[in-house]
Image (cartoon, rainbow, N blue to C red; front, side, top):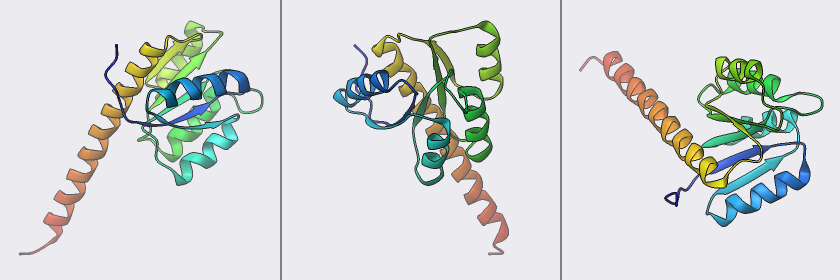
Length: 146
């Protein structure tokens, strides 16, 4: 069994039944979940909220997962994104990873595997934030003439 993680997760998938089921399964394991059904909605969520991980469907009408991934990474390169798809192809997986996706998983996803990936994404994001804060402190210290 995966150790309990506390994480704030954004789920993005156009399949509402899948979204509801996965949200419930993650919430039952102690995660805070926000769920949206489009790339556009995901973009507006990441503007005003921090997430430890974003679970993003590859295939959606309108703005697909790849375009959503690009736009999120342009706005918030610190966010960790796990791609989920029912139609995995090597080409799509390679493209998603090049654009900054942390993982590329196939549906139906095994819940413990997903929880493990969310935990890894949260840990990586915490390291990036810590490094950024250390750089800010160094910059402030260099600017002072004590």
